[in-house]
Amino acid sequence: MTNVTDRKKLAQMPWYPHYPRQIRSALENYNLPEVPLYRLLESSANYYPQSTAVVYEPANFIVSYADLYRLCGWFSAGLIHQFGVSKGDRVAIYSRNYPEFLIAMYGILMAGATYVACNPLLLKHEVEYQMSDAGCRLAIISDDHLPVLKEILKDNSTRLSQVIVFSRDAGLKAKYLGGISTPTEPPFYPFMETFCDSPFESPHIDPKSDLAAVIYTAGTTGQPKGVMVSHYNAVSSSILYYSAYTGKFPELAEDGTLICRNHKEDLTGHWEYPMRYGIDSALAAAPWTHMMGFIAHLNSSIMAAVTIFPLPDFKVDKFLDLIRKWKISFAGGAPQMMSMLLSMQDIDEQDLSSIRVWTTGGAPCPVAVGTAFEERIGGIITEGYSLTEAVMSSTKNPANRSAKRKWGSIGIPLPFTEVKIVDPETGTQEMPMGEDGELIHNGPQVAVGYLNRPEESRQTFKNGWVFTGDLARMDEEGYIFITGRLKDIIIYKGYNIAPRMLEEVIYQLPGVFQCAVVGKKDEVAGEIPVAFVSLKEGITITESEIMDFVNQRVAGYKKVRKVIILDQLPVSGFGKLMKGELKKLL
Image 1 (cartoon, one colour):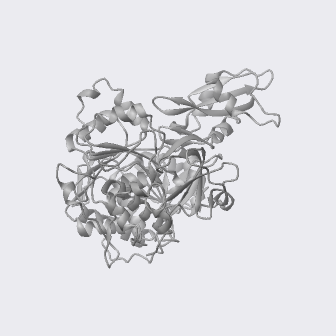
Image 2 (spheres, rainbow, N blue to C red):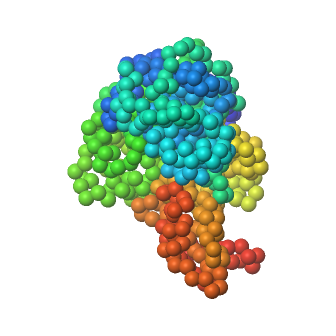
Image 3 (spheres, rainbow, N blue to C red):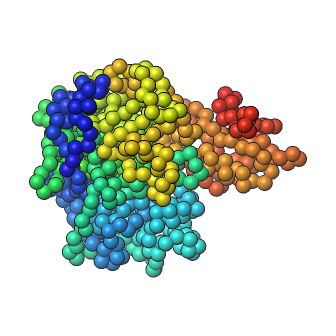
């Protein structure tokens, strides 16, 4: 274990007084544990063995933490003995949030391998790029992705040689490992036949240097970048993130396990902190292939031994039904999800009183939306901020009832985390309180860097600081307000879309002279991609033809929602497209 920052310096920060008393006290001598990520599951299985870990209705799957840990161990043994997985191997998961996903991911970690996240919305060439970039030899997929993987293997364009396939909603039962196996033949193998009760020993993990995950982010270039997440990054992020909901850090046992204990007062109706270890429940709607899902809706929940309700597809009726039926305590998502729920005609008749905390992020939350939604839940809303490169945990509005929360603010830096607002041009001069600048971030959760991208890593990760590309200001109490973005990234329903990637697709269409994609504000989606196009002389192409051409070649969330053809696009004296002028047209 190690100290991660100058504690005297932390105590002088303007946000320090807003930490809960127990957090301030713990900061004097608490050391974040240097343990493998799977230790979170092991700890919950040790201290909350009978607490329900997962409830998944479509497959009639309900499992305790003790049994979930056993299942993950059997799966890990199968990966090692049957597939030869060893330390350092990279194993992709290409699936939505199903119980098999969770079992597979922790099985991968126990085997010492690295989980590679493949967004289930990706098309063939997109997932092919990621698997190739990460050097995956093995992939674990849901059966709906079989056609895509067959094409990838046929093309022989990656190192991929084996694929484990599970059948969705096929009656997986922890006690008997029953269910229906997808008919397969090598190089495809049934998920249910991977489990193996042969003994195995997890290899030694160096938490700071060994990778737990590679999770891809859009960035400002056409191809996505793989963010390398160490075990230490992920464990630190989970602990710091959840401290906002419990007001304390886990205790550390001699064997390296984490002991999570509740405040006694939070077990009563007069609770101060919303989440209780081993008791509460969490709705996992954010994709586990996304950093928010990976930390907030999976690993933090596992650490807290709460009951996870996986939601593969976000459907409003099912979402609300689960909250009402199971009295869900923790839920959340991008502000657009809140807007969607508020727009329902019968929202006033929906019982959301069981929700003790709703977490939001991924895009700025309008004050009107946040206040209107908080009136309909039984607890509080906490808005936070981070990015994939910072492994999700950066800032958060405190979640305890007596804390100060500021609407429109992304909160204060989480413990052991330092945030600065610096001048955008050089990134070296700290801006005065209340003035805009680029938000930069330092802490134990900041990722190792980009996979196979040393130059881009140097540009983004500088001396332990991650440069976010977001403009922000900090008030005198340390609360931070996002004011804009240096980057051109479009955030559609919480998903990042790189404009250049769409522009490159448009340029593949014969007859296109110039194009630029910008984001347009949208009440439901947050932002939608709009393409401005100018055509070569004598060429006639309709706006709908351009839209169809692009949207057939990208994942659903990346689709262009509007095309505008202009005689010419505005350019500067240096010939650079002036996207700011195009945004004014919107």
